[in-house]
Image: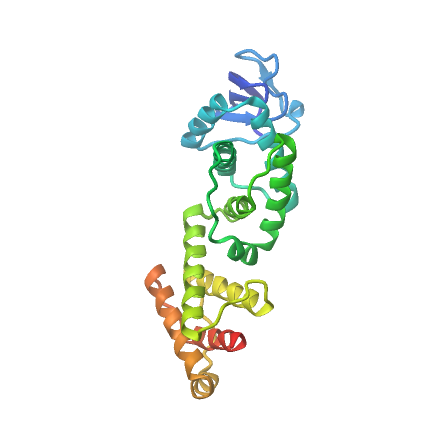
Length: 277
């Protein structure tokens, strides 16, 4: 932990600004960590039950602003929520979640109080793409609802799931949202091209969306898949509609992400499309 830590400023009972042995300024968050403390007081490693260190200066300032603008019990609730997420996901979360999730939930509660509801257009895609994060997000929303005596809309589960995925993978929320929008767009193209209505609860839709996600991830990583020339020829002759649609979807992905896709991807995508028909 690189302690001992010397308190520079108490933000509230559960958050302090401190410096460590290397004279780094950081924020330590933990239950009762600032209670009765004064500037210069020492917090030793063995006295810390749970802490998060926000080392990014910009996020430090954002969090300080949040702490001053929100009720202390709300900050404590979100700290408990993040501890729960970390335990359930069994991994260290990117520290940005303290700022991003706290700010998001605070805004969601405010919208609820004002009678505003923001629809989540990617709810089913999020549940399909990130089932573990979605399950934990359901627990988080239930915890928040019970603690605050409110009822956040179902769409908030999807938003929280994306924050969790962002913190677990260290991917930016904007990139994750871009992928969700892209998959949503691809699904709309499939429905229009095949003149069908996709059942978002079906196993074939589940497989399709997960395949699209893995295709996008392979593109981002520059990974190659084995060529399937013989199978490609068969599929092109047997299922020309699905084969051509697969290439149409690939072109959309290429143009959106500005990255090439190996030809073999069309083979696997054709098979998923054929299942839908």
